Length: 103
Image (cartoon, rainbow, N blue to C red; front, side, top):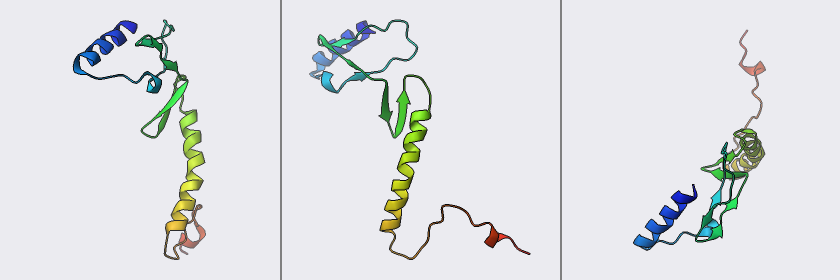
């Protein structure tokens, strides 16, 4: 992995790009070699999880963190929807099955 990073550094220098090491993070999943990686002789920070396109990815491969985050965000989204709604529309969180049953 370090060899690939060194090649990336060399190619970046050739075209005038600079890799921002302080904004670079790494997360390893199921790798035998858990050594430290470097860019421009600076250590890349290792993180246990990160968010990408709204989903939380963790190094254990589970979705518990992502599900918990979505559950925490749901009430906030409902409150925002209720505040922006200019009509008298009522949003039901639980369906009312009694009113839909016909006799």
